[in-house]
Length: 316
Image 1 (cartoon, rainbow, N blue to C red):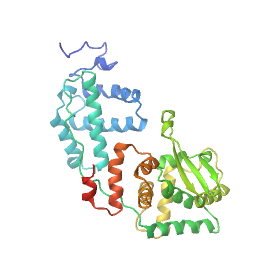
Image 2: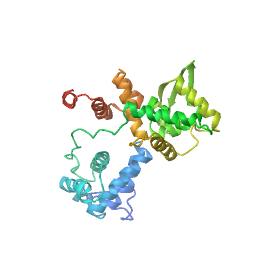
Image 3: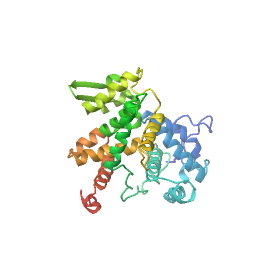
Image 4: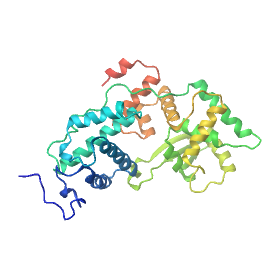
């Protein structure tokens, strides 16, 4: 049985995966791979990221390279180039995603029988501990909160910096999640108690909705904010980037050397919950993480808490 399939009417434009074989140029597979990703429920962000990674591979090996010419050695050389030869820093997170891209892409080619051997199977993800996040200690957190609170009683009171800072410290939500919060997503269940509903943009992710408890102090700041800003569809009336600027300005105003960010405050929120004795599974649910991604995240939280790395690594 030959793996050379019948050629399509327009050979430069394969109409379906059935038109691909080991002689197909790499560049002619990308659009079909994008379609595959979308059909399997991948987000637009994931499709764009995987596509960008494949364009880097094309830059390194040539876009006209037949897909059957890729070997494990070719892919290993590409990954070494990303880290040491491209001249642009490749973070641990970016490296891991690019390995994932290679594995998903070549598995797809193998599954549709366009190639006989999957060259990405032997490629391993990086082992070892991830670097620790740079976070604020409790003294610095107190300084940031104190400065944000001074803005609430300024000549022109502004509760927004205090609201976003306290919200992130209490919930650990991501920037995109904060930007999507609607006024009705904050439920007041009793005096001094509330629930934040963290929703996702896609209807298919409705099952990922999270309910995070918030306290009366945060609700008081929210009420101040609602009295100062005209809120309509979303709670925050500025762009996600502007929210980052607000956090950075808090750091400057509080005299901090570190720049607060959504990611930093997410780590602080998780660490505080862990040190307060919250069950690890409850922290994972609160952060909205999968069990797979939680393994590394929990190890980093424990290291941030000052627990010995050797103890963490030897646990099952």
